[in-house]
Length: 99
Image 1 (cartoon, rainbow, N blue to C red):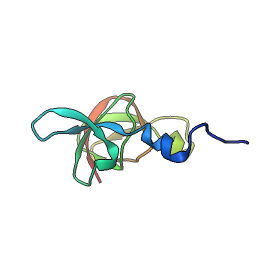
Image 2: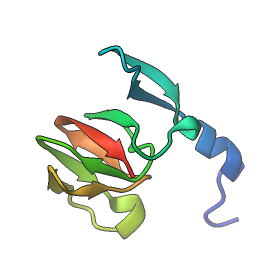
Image 3: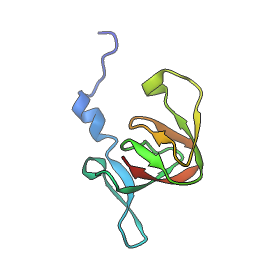
Image 4: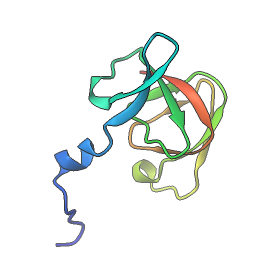
């Protein structure tokens, strides 16, 4: 079947669940992306998937949005820009707030 995946959709989503989030004590911990809520602070770094729609707080990152838009070139995002769930950070590191 054309476009078929070996894993059911639910299983593919589970593969992305580990993300970094602030523990509130100044430390970062891996948590399940499914428990993120608006206002949570997340750390987005090279190679990480964007776990939820997030507003970038500072700095800049290059984000691959090809899964969402089909555009093959990464997009440079800076503070105030919104990174969408399903994209991947390909360069840089920044803190972001879940929208």
